[in-house]
Image 1 (cartoon, rainbow, N blue to C red):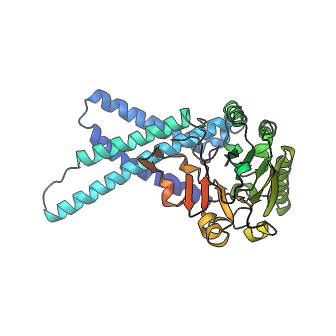
Image 2: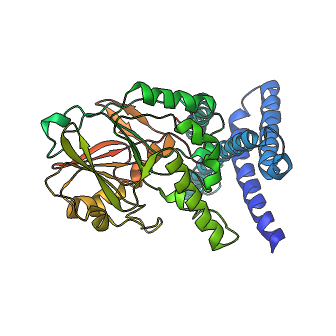
Length: 392
């Protein structure tokens, strides 16, 4: 059974490889022998090299560069596999066209479409190049998004209150410390009145954050730093040896936040006195409209005892919570801050013209500011990464 579980994915990879190779071979058949030969060599070397790096991760696990090497080898393998999968899909579409034409005109030989395969493969290769660029040159290119929100019930003394929101640190994915330090310096340069962190401190285990406790302790704000848990923070994505180990993992993560003087809100609220006025900050545990993610949050409990006429900000990791429960049931919440989507770490945005990412087909609210009457939602794209170690 174990051998079968190993052979099936290898067989699938090989089938995709061979099918994509037919398309590439057709495209390069018009080239002279020299370029064609070099293409064959490069194609084989990349296929064997990335597959070997991916399958042989255990062999490099204890080497000093292993973590970074594994992350990049995984990413290169994924990118190359994606390219070949999409090219194989193009070839399949083209073969379907050829089969229909051959059926319509028996006896005629139907050639592959140079236009379909040529244009499609060029676009796919450009996509692959973008993903490699995003991984090598763009993962830590942090930007400040300055957004003004007219919060309901906000007294005049709180106009201009400056909040810095960060989200989805995913410290287990950080391969370098220096750019993370630059992000923290950037946060402090903004001189925030409040800092809010909206979940996913780690990928799977609290120990991933241990090397960064001192670094994130440097973040300073006038009236405090408040945080909530994200779906990755509970340890649900790790195979723990016991329930006690899982409980300790979450306890350690909570302790790290206390050591940094972050006020972790777990279905509770704080009434802050700022400039002679009151502001309610509410934090819920992870709550998603999707059945794929846990519903640990209890917004009703978190709001108990809060006056409805006070300006209220909610920290809730998953933006799907906003339309699912916050907007229809809790009108006193003027602003919700979320993260979770990462903006898919891939997309295009030109102000006033286009804002697109594949994640929009999964989450209606996936990045930036959204509004329903007097209630606002801001979705942060995240400080860290998950899976693919880059951004496009």
